[in-house]
Amino acid sequence: MTDTSPPDLARLLSECALGNKGAFERLYRATSPKLFAIAVRILGSEAQAEECLQDAYVKIWHRAGDYRPHLASPQTWLVTIVRNGALDTLRRNRRQVTLQDPAHLEFLMDEWSTAPGPEGLDNDSDRLRDCLGQLGEDQRRCLEIAYFQGLSHAEVAQVTGTALGTVKTWIRRGLEQLRKCLDV
Image (cartoon, rainbow, N blue to C red; front, side, top):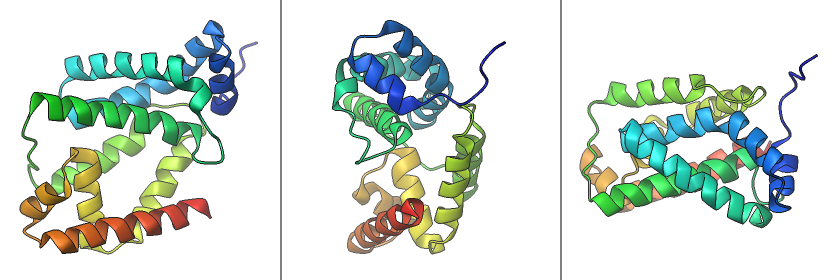
């Protein structure tokens, strides 16, 4: 009989920190589809996303012992590694990312929440969507542009036609609200 329960990502990370290759393989199988989808969305290229994901899993293998459960969920820690790697790739390539239209953000949110991932993690997507829905429209849009498109505050201000200080405030306050909402 096959075990269909969701993997305990924190346990897998702690086993990876001890050099358990089987745990690393299970972690990869459980998380790579969603992490790959995030990398593709940020980079806009499957080839670049594959390279980014490979680099991310090398970092995960070497830094698994750095994971601290009291600071973030395992999924958040893994997503942060992939997202930061993808943003570094964008910056390294000096690629200009442009927002196609406001409906594009809704597409990205739909793709993110329906991207394949380990069982039990879909609730996190639903929670994030609900928490984002509690933000003001402009604030939510700035956060989504910054996160999903990997734009800097100045670039978000330019794309939205909003003052830089306002964008910084909306993003900072929005992140605070999301943190509080997700911690409940």
